[in-house]
Length: 326
Ligand SMILES: Cc1ncc(C[n+]2csc(CCOP(=O)(O)OP(=O)(O)O)c2C)c(N)n1
Ligand SMILES: [Mg+2]
Image 1: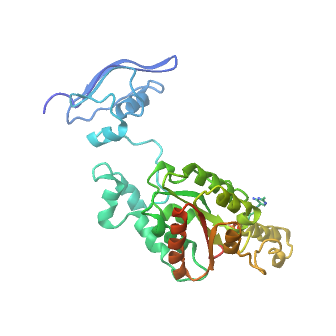
Image 2 (image 1 turned 90 degrees about the vertical axis):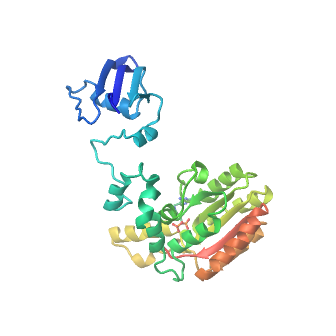
Image 3 (image 1 turned 45 degrees about the horizontal axis):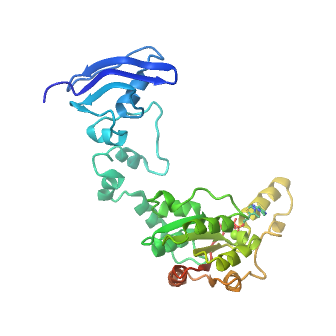
């Protein structure tokens, strides 16, 4: 092929009343290296942003190998070889150094999975391996609970409402649709309420709404279960029960250390045993389905499947699983 590889013809770009690029025309010869040089504020970065599709041009034409690319989104331009880097390095902190480098290949190998799969570097595969550490521990590890729930719902059209297993779920579940999670939770005293709202919003759409529910939070607002029964709001509630207002307990320990007071008293008002609340019984008392407490990890999956069947009938089903603290 001959002719220039890239051509800008009379390109202009304004931001409000500020004309940053005006009537710019140039060509880049095929196989050449071309630099854009100019003083600060000359508009160099804007030109790069126009060529790479970060901004759209106001006027003129932009041709790649003779084809007009002005309307092409940057994710497609990159496949045609138009890429940029940034002055500030932008790493993905959850990936290894090698994975960060390999990501640069994603546009040529069918996406991130395409690059990483052949060498078994998909981070989720690695995290799933890591999640199998202490697999049979009782109380149940967070990672096992997160994975057991994932295995039970991954073929459903699922939505995650409140989520008390943040680290594990983000690594182990595949959030492949915008509606899979509404965003962050507001913390204790809100989780069951917010989850109920999410479940109501998705009611009738054939989706399975999952709430990974802390025990202390449900102590505050048991009536939410009755509301779900009364208004037939289906939801799978998997209780991550650490028999404690643990977040607060940790805080009390920290405060005792800071103040030099008796750390052994930090549990007062913080532990939730002696007697243990029976959350499955509570769910049933409110007109919902309830099972538990479950402390043998192998019992979780069958219980989840039974609960799922109840949710599909239009009910709230609660599984009370006993987990480690943190
Ligand atoms: C009404 C109310 N009281 C107290 C708190 C303070 N607080 C924040 S986290 C927490 C403990 C939560 O326990 P749980 O819901 O079981 O979650 P865990 O930390 O055990 O995972 C408490 C009491 C709060 N957020 N709201
Ligand atoms: Mg708790």
